[in-house]
Image 1 (cartoon, rainbow, N blue to C red):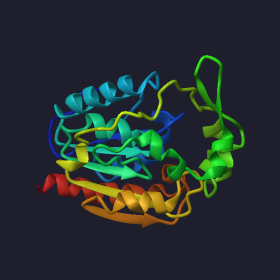
Image 2: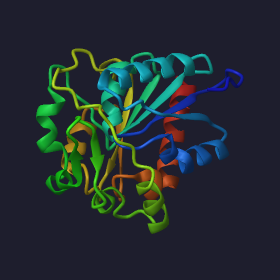
Image 3: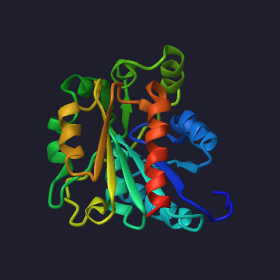
Image 4: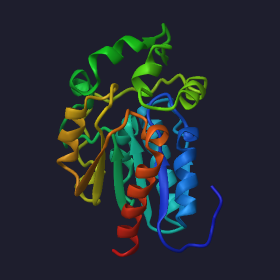
Length: 233
C-alpha cells in the first residue's frame, strides 16, 4: 500500500468469497474522481483467522493515511466484524453482520438463496470453488462483459464461515451503514434487511449481489456520502 499524504478519509475495500481486489476497480475509479483516496485489499482466503488478521493489518496501515472508512462485501463482513474495530466507520454491502454470540455458520441456510448452494463445490482437501452456474446468481443484473470477465478470476478458498460466535463485532462500537442489494440472487434480501436494521444508516439498491459491477455509480456515491461523515465527525 503506497502512502499518500494523510488528510481526509481513506476508503478501504474488502471483497467477498472467491473474489479479489479486482472486483472494486470501477468503484475505486469513481471514488478517485470524487477526490477520495481508496485501496482494495486481497484477502488471503486461506482461513477465517488469516482473513481477519489481514483486515486488521490493512486497517492499521490505512489509519496512517487518514480515518478509515472500511467497506465489506458479502463474506467480507465477517473478517471486518472481527478485525475492523480501529476503523472510523463501516459499510456492509450485502454483507454478513453478525450479532454477538451468534454462530454465523449456523445461520448460513437462512443467509444464502437455497439455489446458490448448488453452485458451490468442496474438494477432497476442503478447498471450495464456484461452479459455472454461480455466474447467473452473482451477476444477474451485471453487464455480460463484466460477468464473463469476473468468472475467469474467481479464486478457490479454504476460509470458512466460522461456527464460533464473535463476542464483540466491530459494528457494536463503530458507526455503520448497510447497502441492501434488493435484486440479489445469492444472499436473500430479507436476510440483508435484518442486518441493515442493526446499522446506523441504510440504503437499498435495485441490483444483484455485485453492485461494484451492476450499480457502481450509486454505490460509489453512497460510499462518498459515508466518507463525508468520517471527515466531518
